Image (cartoon, rainbow, N blue to C red; front, side, top):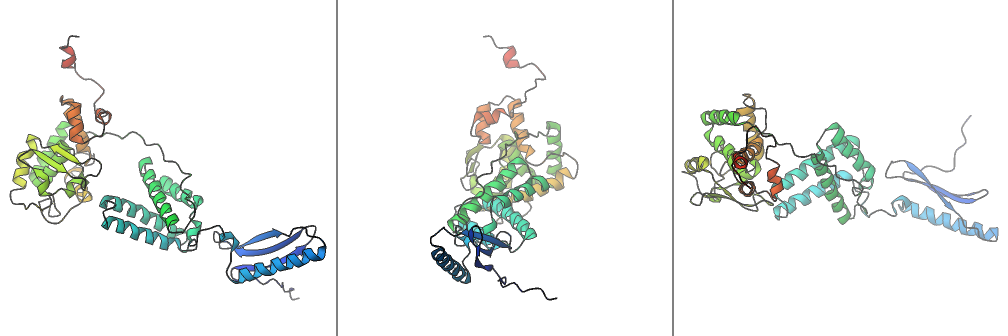
Length: 381
């Protein structure tokens, strides 16, 4: 027996409206939900007009108008959404990334900032692609943000600090979407940053430092000098990659870190005696415009290197030879700690490390005493 044919034939994006008269008069129709891709039923109550014939006439007029709008592509679910909310999310990510690249070209953001944002957005794009490559921007809501942040925190096992970087990047992305009329509200606002754990200071003890420096003297003197700048001058590897020969003021015994090199902590640092002669030798054939430690095996040259390359060399020369398990940046922590241990004024260390506050510097002071403090022993107050 053939099933009775339903006169309501599903359209691609909607089922036409019909009036249903029971205890209540209801106009019922269905439209495709952008969130699920499935038809979602919409119910609209007909006001109680009198007489009943007038009510029927008005209900029929409303039903006809709804069907005319549906045929023209109207979707009441999207009525309160932004005009571009049905753009593919992958396309909007691509547009955002191009906007970031333009910001970098216009010096609005630094290269390191661009690299960080681009890396996070690539991970987000890969995650979206793994779920549904044809996802609409409409679905960039708090639920999606929550699921992605859970993914990076629980599956990728990032730190609280890195989690906060992901959240910050998604907020910037959401603000961009609002500016470009993709969405109307920022779905990241309800999420709070995670509390960072105090930064763990990792110190390479002095005998191990001496062993590392002796080894580097044999295998790569240029890289040894680079490591000394981290250890004695507290310059970060990424900052070192941007230094040029003209930033070195040998006669004054200073290195200048410009705002282009270090946006928040620019200024001068002092070159200690164990470094200044090595620097002079390193620069003997260099041009003023050369990078201090280039891609050419850390020699001065025209091709800029990057912080990652320096970390790779540390892995090659130090960690693989089991001279220490600590990472490259431990040289900076060690240098600050030993300067304070040896009695260098915390204010001098603060200025050399370009700390914004003395309380940051004092976190490097070792709390446990192993011998009597001579300044206390000889004091008389």
